[in-house]
Image 1 (cartoon, rainbow, N blue to C red):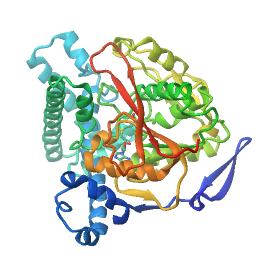
Image 2 (image 1 turned 90 degrees about the horizontal axis):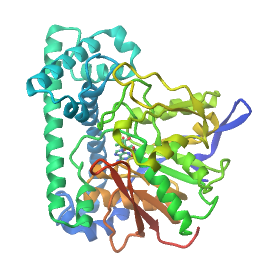
Image 3 (image 1 turned 90 degrees about the vertical axis):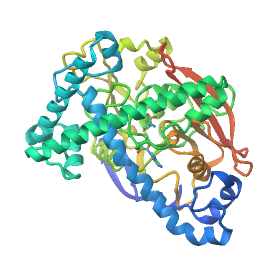
Length: 471
Ligand SMILES: C[S@@+](CC[C@H](N)C(=O)[O-])C[C@H]1O[C@@H](n2cnc3c(N)ncnc32)[C@H](O)[C@@H]1O
């Protein structure tokens, strides 16, 4: 374990002794580390570096890499604005009107006029709730969105602020609809080429210009478990050999873009899902497993840090697992949902679904504090930053994060992931990443996991391994 993880405090939480690590040191990627990649990528380089001499690149690099890091972090705000729109369309905590999901729309066959009126009324409800300090104070999602809009100069209490807010919401709604259309067109065009490999490569950077959203759902964790199962069966990962695990971008379930819900507290799923899977598959020992959750979102990081602090005082973490029977999940995914959490906690009473969502199947799991305390959040931009000390991760998971970057940034991220992994360690990602000749990260295989009978509902999980033999 590196020095930066040395224990500085020991707490007693019930019978469990839990250690708090000191703040891990993170630093920017240096020019020397990036140089081999810059040399191989030629045409894919950003304008500021393309065609420049090595001396010039080395000179501009330190300021450039910091500016890029800031630019990436600035994309979080547009992601928050996307979240505002998901909340507007799907939220049930601020409006009693029907949710505006694709499913609902096709079921009810509403006219355009009725649809416009519904959206209009939902915007009214949202603005009213954002302006109601008491309501917003009691609802963490409203509280966050209120801060977001006030931060941009729109006070929902004032008539002028409300008018501006309406324009802002409408502009963001139109932007997200336009973006959705353009993603659908890109996917359709890629499919027309009739080459599934090329289509996957195209999809793997689909959101490169999109705001960074925190959306997270259960399904990708099922695909990760299926991959780990297959890797164990193939002898790629030995029983009880996984000790250090990294989750890049664990996310935060606010009201996800697929038709998410807002009737339970915000939550993260992936770090706990991973512990659950590794124990279920016998790939890790409970007392040896350590998870590091790398993220750049202050909200995701604060959420994990707060859960960890509460766990140290003996509080469990409750994860809500809604399942929409209309989503036509495959039986294996339903089985995964049914057994989710049996290695890391006990079933809990699910949060009651509001009227209009009564068809949902609900489960909840109370994750044992000792497991929650095993997850350490670290603020690290995987594209432009590294840990200062050498690392030895056995396994890293990166789902639905690298899709937000283009090839050059994905390649930097892959080099940074390589620096975190031990020799022979694995990265599992649902993205196809460029494998440069001088990179030690090579894809070994991939697994396709289908979630439901709906078109395009599944993931290809690619297994990348850091060259070397140690297991
Ligand atoms: C869409 S969520 C995916 C959540 C989860 N992995 C899943 O598959 O359900 C993307 C997450 O990646 C994080 N993220 C985006 N860019 C990042 C970066 N450069 N470094 C670290 N985390 C990043 C976001 O803040 C967010 O938490």
